[in-house]
Image (cartoon, rainbow, N blue to C red; front, side, top):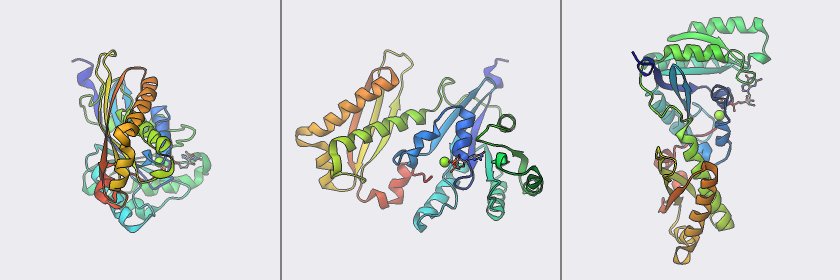
Length: 303
Ligand code: GDP
Ligand code: MG
């Protein structure tokens, strides 16, 4: 048997209420500040796909929207649907509990749903650096009793305490499978996000106050050829809400969009260390900021 055929791989959904420590854990596991990219407004709408390549496994982390976040009603419903649509395709769920503020009822509901969907669940009690061991024991007992929960692992995503144990259990819970992404790739989502962010930044810079918050950038295609002399090819849509804004982004004789494209391309080339072909399209998406479908296309994600 070759090493490749012994590989384990799969999608892992990170679940937990806002502030449970999902991004911190992802950063800790990946050893990179990927989730920090999502701190900026545009990219927070994107779902992060962090890829962890280990000699024996490829773990694909889905950072799901916080279920039951407290925003307006429509978004909440949207987020829940979105969250579960992500989870449905996961091989494993990691339920992150903030042990300083556990929400047992909600966690039970999540565990129940995972159990019904036959998705294995590892429960992690996070922030143990801030809690007394004696308080932890009843919590471990409680969470061990939830349906479908195979393990309860206390960790501190901040200090890294327990995270190795968690990773070991995650890998063990994954099925044997192929590498879904090239083994040297950290996260194609990260580069896509960066590309979207850079284009959007140029739109902001060049348009000043005229089109402030009604634009979004969606990278629709990102191709990175194996040979490093070949350019990375990126296609992105700049979304605007109104017809008049479309004309403004394009500019007289296409000058504005051309400038946006040139500046974004130059910055991307520096960042990626190789040639980039960047194609930009301006797309009218009436009232996209209020349209759940459009938000979904953009991979809307709260936190
Ligand atoms: P998310 O909303 O689930 O992605 O949560 P974040 O990862 O953004 O974390 C929310 C807050 O909790 C941040 O201030 C983190 O620094 C903090 N935090 C996360 N993990 C830990 C931990 O293990 N210990 C402590 N003390 N704080 C943590
Ligand atoms: Mg987060």
